[in-house]
Amino acid sequence: MTDTKGERIAKRLARVGVASRREAERLIADGRVSVNGNVLTSPAFNVGPDDVIQLDGEAIPAIPAIRVWRLHKPEGVVVTHRDEKNRKTVFDLLPANIGHVMTVGRLDLASEGLLLLTNDGDLARWLELPATGWARRYRVRVFGTPTKAMMAKLAKGMTVEGVTYGPIEAKIDSQQGANAWLTVTLREGKNREIRRVMEALGLKVNRLLRTAYGPFQLGSLPRGGFEEVPAKTLREQLGAQWHDRIDAYRRRAS
Image 1 (cartoon, rainbow, N blue to C red):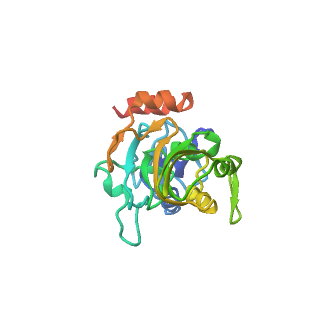
Image 2 (cartoon, one colour; image 1 turned 180 degrees about the horizontal axis):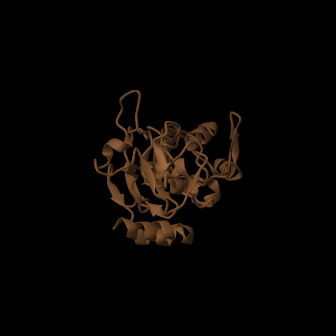
Image 3 (tube, one colour; image 1 turned 90 degrees about the vertical axis):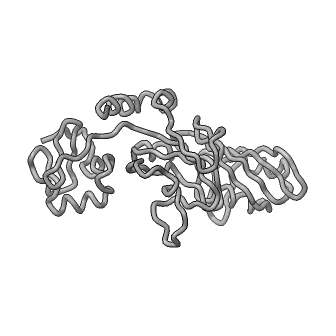
């Protein structure tokens, strides 16, 4: 029925914004999904680019062009679709007609700065992988007096409360009274990593601003600002492995 080298049907349904992968599996179990006129009975099924996929008898949307946006996340905004405490989320800052998008990584409630969003789950996961090698750069204000010896500890990697953190490049920019500014670069980005390693050194982070994620820069984007990355820039920065999804799908959608 289809190319065994394609992608799983649940993944395709998720990519075009019909349902999450888990929800897609339930739709298939209920007999609501067909491929080339045949109702599926299992999510263990691959589809190719030319297969006709229907949900409840209606064709699902075409695979969209890969799109990426930059958002200047303000402090106090949560990076989640729904918040049980009813706090403002980053998705409240987006245009109503943006469609299905997901964040690339996270920034905690008290952090601010560059947050990337995309409409493609594969790209989001790839951008988050340490193996991709993209550096995340931050401006960090700490309460305390950092030293070169502390920066050397960060460069070697640290273990804090049983969690091992890889090497972190940190540079002391200035000391202003009881506070100091640092430029910090890391490539892994575990949960609250910067705050935890700084606290282990006796420094308390009181402001954390992400200024770059790989080649994408915060630049002059204002707080709360939202801007799409041009397709030309995506081609230049993401590499040849993504060109088909950027170009072919964009032509199909036009």
